[in-house]
Amino acid sequence: MAERNKQEPMTDSKWKESIVQKWKNWVKDNPDWEDFYDGLMSVPSLIERGTKNAEKRRRIATGIRTCFIAMEVSDNPFAAGATSSLPEKVERTKTTELGELKKAYINFWKTCAQARRYLVKSKRGGGGVFSSAEEFAQYQIDLLTNKLSAYYNDFADGKTTKDYHWKGTQTALINNIPLLKKAKEADAKKTEQEEASKEAE
Image (cartoon, rainbow, N blue to C red):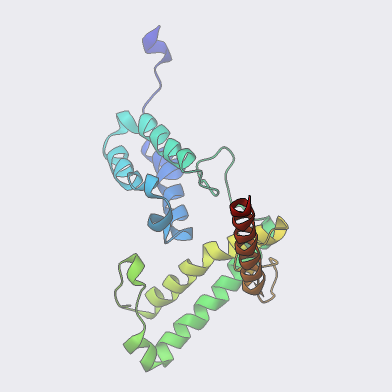
């Protein structure tokens, strides 16, 4: 009976499609993930182990999903039914806009000697210089990709927790920084008044 119920090892194609590729896509959308999700640090080594050992892939996949759940990752690629967090029309607009922006970045790199001399990668991500126009352009796009999704979701949810809002259309970002600054100052003042009130008692 036990042998009859034993699951077959996850195939190479299934592993790559359901785990490896989803992880790669998520990392591409979250280039600074190491700064925010320390609980995911083991995922790369888990994926490496699963790639080498088919017999343990199902158990490893469960471990990876658990890591994402434990960290409460909002755009968890392994959640049931997880795809893009954006409506289809917004996703298409985002893809088109970023595609055009990437072309502009490539042209900028090719035509500006100063850019090639002085622009470098963020130290937070390990730093370094760019070796080509493609690398420079993709680096800039990767930084913006996840931000646009976050800016849109904040806007669509009727919240103001992000520095900017994006309406999901071919329109400029909306600057929320002044509003967030005022809200932060108001919260600080309220806290100060409450503490003063407690001391007076």
